[in-house]
Image (cartoon, rainbow, N blue to C red; front, side):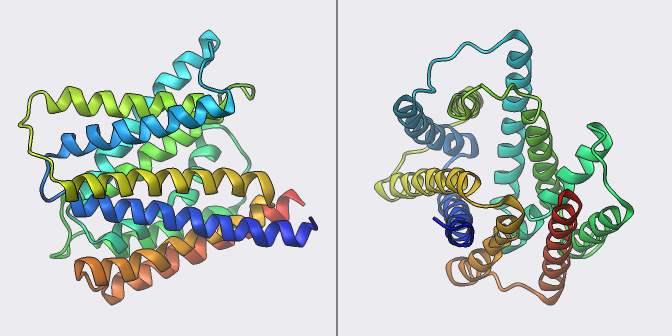
Length: 290
């Protein structure tokens, strides 16, 4: 396969990955009105963990004994995964799907900034400027002080922070640890947290429709993960990375037609700023690497 063909196919996989994640979020938002918060996390955790265990067993990455250094990192990563899940779903249940998806698009900017501050990775003034412009776009989306602003916008920003921490500590893991093992451990931790918190709440009856929604969310999430892995293994990261913003092309119409949430001008302008800043950061990083 030629280099250009590999990049083209990888870009399609990235768009498929983003579609999987947004569709999974859509199913989770649909089921959230009728079931307890932690009950949803626990039940979806069972489905996702079961799928990951089967996938890890197939890839031979299910049974592994990490080194002592890596155990601590895996625990911190799993704790960050739990925090991200709680914050993200709290925001998802109370915010328009398009808005929280747009806020999550600031992740590459947050990771670049955190890597510069905590890992001492070199970042020039142009990328610093793009990062802060991108964060200004996030402020336009959440609009502190406006009537539409509430605590759930802070939950969305908290989700960005936890995912940034998760991805940052992941870089410290030894390269030989199977990714599937790390994914199963994190998914299992989220599932157990859901069951532990659910024990102090009330169990809600689960209908066939809700089981269908949860199954759809788990399958779409696994599809998103699988496409993401295929993306990173096939194409050039600097070429493929901007296609992650196609998540908004899915989130905006789904938010409008499924939930009736029409994005306002500030959300659209803020999303454009976040996306433009992210693409510039990718391009600048690619140029410096070359």
